[in-house]
Length: 425
Image 1 (cartoon, rainbow, N blue to C red):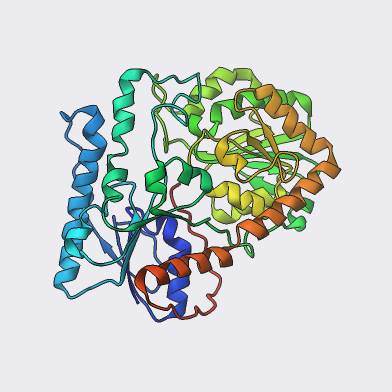
Image 2: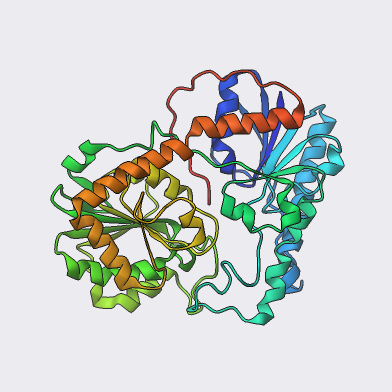
């Protein structure tokens, strides 16, 4: 079968399905993307030049659409060149978030198209206005509503959609949900798994060594920002350090902004929150290693005594799935995306997004109650095995492709172990 994938940051959310298709050794896989250094053997990358940014004089509510149609134009030209070379895909699979797929119907009018539908924006009721510390005025509502322009055009391209969680799917209007398939994303359970040996040896991250006798609290986000509860976690740190002298804390994440806005005062959120916490941030017990290699990240999760995952009502991170698969003792924010994965007291503990002292108390409870921790860890792994199996995810993906194309996919061969690649999420 001939597959055309589209994502501005190859391979994006399509890493696992692409590797699975490559393993069959019977497909032609073409991937349109902006240039990057990521490589998957067996995939032909076709780069397109990043388009010019949205016009500076465009209305603020229209800038995202302006950027999207510019990107759609660039991808459409690239696709047109492929067609002139004789390439005819059997299915097009891509992410609708940046508008890349909006012109592909003009190139291949009859080809089945499956678009990743990640989130439907609303000015009230979910992420916007969730955190009273960062209020949004009604003057910004038109811009937020206009972010769905790409969603609406995409939903009228005579294709189908996919969404990775029930809650993310629920953000779409009822009429749109009928066109979107729920495909729960999986985790490689053979890679993301408990490793008791890690807990019996020293582990060094960001220049700080965690000894077997230390109690490790971990936090992970692609970028350290309010959408992922970074201010809450920072404000919990002094409580944690006072509670026990043996606690050490690792805060993994970059200094950019993936979601939301940068600090109005300039700089980055790590700098802003470090100034706020001041002397309560003991650098001998708290480290900010930035983004770390996957192997380091995995060892950190396996060693963690209490792993904190926080988020606005927004897109759930892959790190939450991986922490469950590893069997972490998780403290999660009591918000809709997290509740889909964690049942309080069963496979993790939930706490208020707005109470740093409560977050610290909950983490300390996990550290001090070994029987509770062991039960939650075991149940986290069981949940991952039941709901996050990569095998089940790929089977569901294949079934959807077969239904849309009317073509039967051959069985995949086993892939040799490969270095994990993380997409921007």
